[in-house]
Image 1: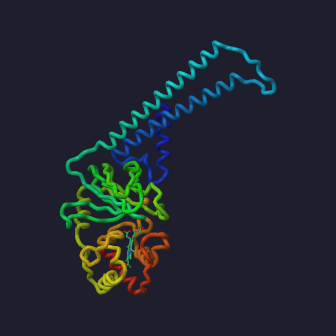
Image 2: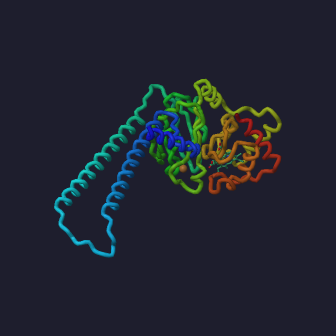
Image 3: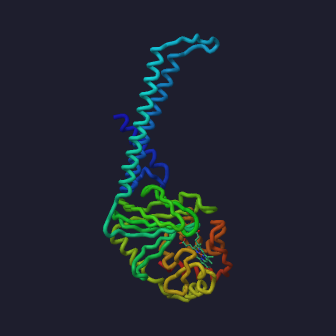
Length: 335
Ligand code: HEC
Ligand SMILES: [Cu+2]
């Protein structure tokens, strides 16, 4: 059928619009939202076609030259037909809007209604301008703390608990779920599930200050074994330096301002102003998906974080090249 073909054509076209794509659902929540999107799209499309057709018909039928006024004729029969037509149109419109409302409620229920006895729970806290992800556990030493790169097992329900450390942020990974606001001092929860392994991009979707546009995250969905390996790795304290260079790097870290803002578990650095760096070397990107996690980008970030992300909460660090090199090497070993 041509409509079906048009639909798949449009859906295909949507694939070229980049990695942030709610028409590329990766799990049940996003699928529900995608379904609703297409239903509303086709209803409004039909309404558009009908309205344009109606206008065209009226315009063609009642054509007259504007130079001469038409005499006013009382056409009772015409009036009756017109009010009947308008009445019907209003009725159909109201009915359609109620139908859309109903489907929207159904979708909302479907998106929320995932339950599981033993879900993976992740506490996400929005900061200007990065995401803290904590995998809470009743035992402190079984709690994972990381930033911006969120790992989840494929095909398993995951509970996301939200919070914000400063202003309102909004957690949005279009292929996974709709936008969820993170409000300071108010915790809420929602479910996600990802059925296809992969890395899904996310963004802050609520304007939160100067670097709002550089507040990205990614959700890495991997099979159960890989996820458990990742968990086990993240639970370990930081690796001990095993060369004079990395010993020096750790020394540089512990004797500079870094300790006032960052944690490296297994060392004396225990502040949570900035991202936990215990396993910073395992992350693909740094600074909320702004820079690749390469020695060059890391060095540039440490020397002058204000250059790539003006206004962010990390101050420049004037280190000599030897210290900087050692520090970057040390951070790179924190897998
Ligand atoms: C005043 C607090 C502060 C100090 C001091 C500070 N940082 Fe940061 N750091 C931050 C904040 C906040 C971020 C997150 C910035 C963002 O993404 O917007 C950050 C991010 C980082 C990141 C990127 C982490 C990631 O996963 O994205 C690294 C690496 C880092 N800092 C290393 C250092 C080192 C090394 C030092 C010492 C030379 C240092 N920081 C000093 C606050 C600080
Ligand atoms: Cu934000």
